[in-house]
Length: 334
Image (cartoon, rainbow, N blue to C red):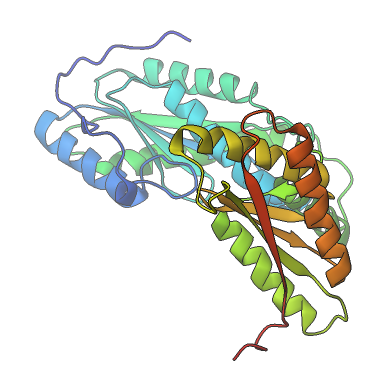
C-alpha cells in the first residue's frame, strides 16, 4: 500500500510516543479523549486534515460466536494493522468498542479519502489470527476532509453519516442465511473463551522432571498447598538443600554459580513432574514434594545427594546438606 507524505510539518503525535494515560488499555492506540483533544488542537492551528472512521462489521456476532477473548485479539490486531498503514505523524485512536479513527494532518479531496477507505477495507480482509478459527473480518471505512470552521465533531459526524450509508447499502445487497439459535451462539462463544483460556494457562513446553519456579511463584504455590491441606488428608514436605564446603561454609564465589547450576539440574532430573523447586539463596534450593510421607521425603533428598556426589566433577570437597519440614494446613501456625 502506497503511503502518503504529510503536507504539514506540524507534529501531531508527540515525539515521546504513546504515554500510558493517553492509550487505550486493550489496543495500545490513543484513547477517545486524547484523540479528540489532539485533533481539535491541530485543526485550530493548521485548518487542514482528513479523518477516517473505521467500524468493524458485525463485531457482536464475532464475540457471540467465538468468544470475547477472540474478539479482543482481533481488535488488538486490527489496531496494529491500522498503525502499520499510517505514517508516523498520523494519529490512530479507538473511539468506541469496535470503532477506530485515523487522522492524517494533510489536506486532500474526497476522491483521495474514498481511495484510502477502500485500501483499508481491502487490507483488513487479509487479517487473521494464529491458532484461532477461520474468521472472516471486514470493516466499513468512511472519511471526510476539513472544511472551514470544522472541529473534530464536525469531521466525525460527516464521516459517521457516510459510514451509516455504506453499512445500509451493504446490508441490502447481502444475502441472508438461516437465523442462528441464540442459545447455540452463546454456548459456542463460551466454549471458545474456555478453549483460549486453557491455551493461555497451560504450559506450552513441558520440561521433564520437577517444576522450577521463581521464589515468589513458589511462595504462592506453597500457600495454595497449605489451603488445600485444610480439606484434604494428604502430606507434603519442604526440603531445604544447602551447598557447603568441608568447613560448613558456602563455596567460593568462583565455584558457586557453576555448582548451583549443576545442582539445579540434578534436582530437576531426580524429581517428579508434580514436584516444585526454587532457588532460595545463592547456595540453597527449596523443594516441595507433594503427597509424600517423611520417609519418602528423606529418600528424595538422598536421591538428589547421591546424584550430586556421583556426577559432580567440579569440586569433590563440597557437601550437600538437607533438612525436611512438613507443610501445615493454612492457619495451623497461628
